[in-house]
Structures are given as structure tokens and as C-alpha cells.
Amino acid sequence: AQSVTQLDSHVSVSEGTPVLLRCNYSSSYSPSLFWYVQHPNKGLQLLLKYTSAATLVKGINGFEAEFKKSETSFHLTKPSAHMSDAAEYFCVVSDLGSQGNLIFGKGTKLSVKP
Amino acid sequence: EAQVTQNPRYLITVTGKKLTVTCSQNMNHEYMSWYRQDPGLGLRQIYYSMNVEVTDKGDVPEGYKVSRKEKRNFPLILESPSPNQTSLYFCASSLTPLAKTQYFGPGTRLLVL
Image (cartoon, rainbow over all chains, first blue to last red; front, side, top):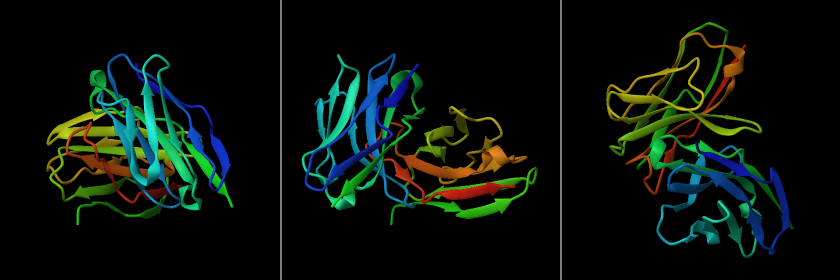
């Protein structure tokens, strides 16, 4: 069975400092992994996706994530936070064994201080 | 413009009164899905559909029904809503389940009294 754990419910950083949002997953098959962002009172937007190609995935707005099979992790990073990055971020897993069934993490709320 | 639309956007109803939330996409996508979002629980998949007349349960299907008679529409039906179905609901679509871009609707906020 697949599952996803976002290790921090809330992360606070200062503008201009690095961002690290942690995600661990479990999957019986080769997983596909996603990060989505949700700004306040908005829908969800895809940041990036991993589907067994390059393990380092670059997304929009300067975010990237690295798939580490040995650690079953897919952490999201950004070198320098911007005020507009303040939002909630969701890690999502899907695998071939349950095609169509996406499992969302509980979300990490990112706050950015000036 | 490529989009997923949901109606209504806001709904207040009472326990037991049947309701339907519509979802429509204009991208000829095969895959559509419904989620509910609750504080501290993230998004949980209710039902999904791989194509017309093909639907399957997600993680929290109890109390919900769906249908997929046409490719563009995927309504969510609550036959007898209860207060624990008060939530924010999102519809999503994509060309395939693992497509690079999943399109989400704007959300429907439901309050069941």
C-alpha cells in the first residue's frame, strides 16, 4: 500500500533563506511523486513531478525536489525564499499498482518572514 | 481557456437533503477525480474515473456517489448529506492519471447543518 508523510506541518523561514519541505513515501511499485502548492483561498497548482526519469526534478518558481529511493524521500527545496512562496504544500504519491489513486500528504504550511 | 469548473462554489444545506456538485472540463481529459480537503488531513481522494463509464473508489468514498456518462462531466452526488461531509471539495482532471499536469477546479465549500 502506498502512503506519504510530510514531516513538518508548519515551516517558517526568512525571506532570502533556503526552503526545505520534507516528504517520505512508501510504495509497493515504482512510484510517481508530485508536489502541489495551494495559495490561500486558491486551488492547487502542480509544482513538479517525478516519474522515474532524472532523480532531480526542477519545477516552477525555482523549486526542485530530489527522489532518493534508498531513503524513500522526495524533499522539496528552494535556494532562496520569496514572500510569494507563503502557501501550503502537498506531497503526493501514486504508483502503478493503484493507477488513478493519488495519495496526498497532510500538507506543510510555509510561512515567509520579511 | 483550458479549465475545470465546479458548481456551486458555496453551498449550505441540511442533513439528508440530496445534493449534486457538478464538475466539467473542456480539455477532453480521460481522467477525473474528486477530493475533499479538511484541516490537518490534506486532500483525500473520494472517487476517480479513468474514462467514460469507468469509476472507482478512492480513499474516502462512503456517503458519496459519482457518474461519468460523458467525458467532460463528473458530478459528485451526496444522497443524504451529513455534517461530517462539511468540507472543501475539489474536482481535478488530467489526460491520464500520471500526466504531468493535473488541473484542479476552484473548489466547492460545503456546509451541512
